Image (cartoon, rainbow, N blue to C red; front, side, top):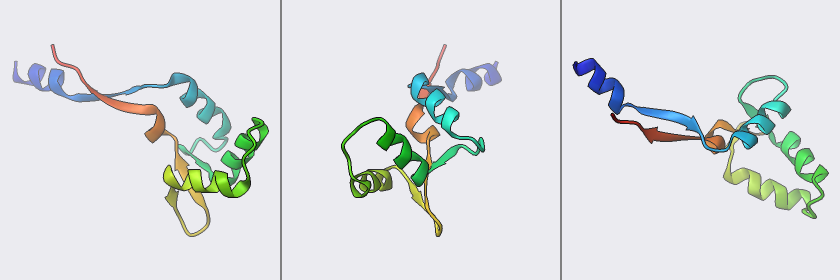
Length: 87
């Protein structure tokens, strides 16, 4: 009985924006769970937005973890949210 209550009160992760997740998985060719900054810059420039590389880089830094080599964007943080399910 206690295990049922614990299981019911656990916080579960669910996908808030399925289209965004599918787009990120499509461009994540290595299936590593992240996109590199240069890949995201190329994606943004092909959409036709009139942004310079510097403007795109500034926006990427907000959603990224900086490594020694490049900026890595973990897309699961942008597409998955927590929700509490209780019965």
